[in-house]
Image 1 (cartoon, one colour):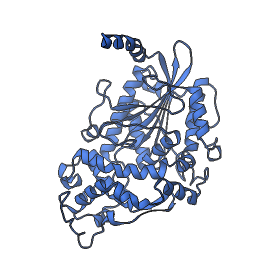
Image 2 (tube, rainbow, N blue to C red; image 1 turned 30 degrees about the vertical axis):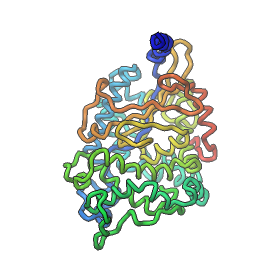
Image 3 (cartoon, rainbow, N blue to C red; image 1 turned 90 degrees about the horizontal axis):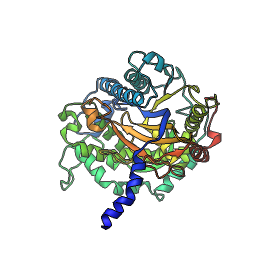
Length: 431
């Protein structure tokens, strides 16, 4: 009887959560590029491994052919979803006029955006906006002179999160470091004593971890942590690009172990770009443009510091994991999806902000989510449909989201929360 009573009490709430009384008015997709080749050359990577890394078919840091194909598949899914939602009508020439694409001006992000556009509007892919030269203040505000990072403050902020002892990460992540070393030097995990480093090679796990002023694009130099990340990330890229099993980490890792090693990547990104002081400097300009674009769409009036125009219904912004991580850090957004580590910015994954309007009250709300292909969907180039979609995690917006199933946040509340997080001195209403 008690169980029946509880079920009866919960039924109206569950029914209310299942009913979506909103209409999608605009969507902003802020994503990472798809599968690329490693940033370091093989000659550099091979210094840290017993065997040679497999060769990618493109130069370092470029989008692979599979990466482009995967992004076109993803664009096709968004096409189906947005058409179902009524935001697109299915006439590519007409829809293209309501879509805005912008990418950071590096090859892999431009190519990703172009591939996404082909998937979304194959008959009339819209042009991708990017700066032909120089740095884009939307994605790289420091080098563009829009914001200023105090390197000493950044080092202190990161070091303070580690109790002033960055080297403590060696013990906190001992399991991941041990796994990485065993793969790199080709011996069974847990073997004792641990084999010596092969002659002429460098053990990345032995390089001291520190916190020092960084270089452009890297706020803080974390020493050995950066090296370990750079030599383990290729394993994820090899798997996602569909390489033969023997070429994925020399056949020494399962998909779950590859995911475990991405904890090192996530640690590096978290310290470098989610640290509050750094995130505020790096993402205030982008956040300001996102907020103003949503307001512009809701009011129908052109607004300084926004992107697109009041009629823009779909906005796709493509950059890198550092950009997505930093914006998430600024707004305190978190997500977890099966097969991935917490807050991991997957290849081709995106933070998605939906502007919705209540059909009954007319109120505008913001609904956030993180959308990405799973590791196996990437590896197998799985066709995505509404019945076989990518992974989607609803994202709670602290200080704003309600207790609804999708964590809807009133637009006015989103503006308030974002304005409190944004450093106006680091935002430019022109760029």
